[in-house]
Image (cartoon, rainbow, N blue to C red):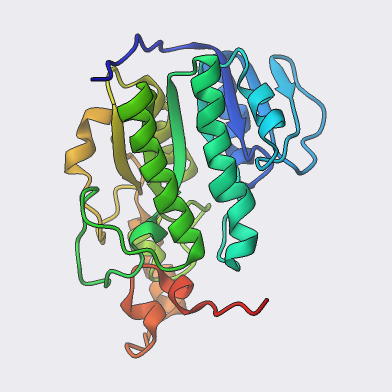
Length: 274
């Protein structure tokens, strides 16, 4: 039976993959406060390393490059990969093969905690009149959601077999403000994103835990009660944007699958022709 390992509140070296993406750019300056060295990776230009940073570009499908990324790393915040819906052939290299490479690198080099950026699209084919919890069976809304479901199953396997702990974050919609009425339920502020990631990195015992990434919104489809052991307590809310968002979108087409299902527009994308 796997056992948890001692978990520090400050890390010697953290790895952030997907560091040039939207959320990676937000977390880059924030995570530096919690570690001596922040190792950054992406396939997109990351600029010069600031003091206390290491820049190591790598394609996630490159096993050797990812293995090198994990050397000397205490913990990983894994945001890397394709973040929107595409054909399966485009999703496969980074999201599926790449996530496997991250876990294999962690196993080989002794990293014992991974924060995995999963997605609400793992359960996107549930309706917006349903409230889910992290143990609700998966219903992915596309190939992207399928890849994140694979990642969660991979995380469970690496905990059961090798004792590598993971918190899988089913991230909702993390933007400066909600863009539509759907996001009044799924929105998470950047400050709450930081709180969620750091709670996931520093909670004493997590095994493999799943938690929905959202702020303290009045409207919600997700019940995180079973993940309260993480210690995440959101402090922001989409409610302050509600009047503005509803004024922009006063009428909803209830025949539109994007309105009916929690995955929004993702449920309508495809098929993708090769």
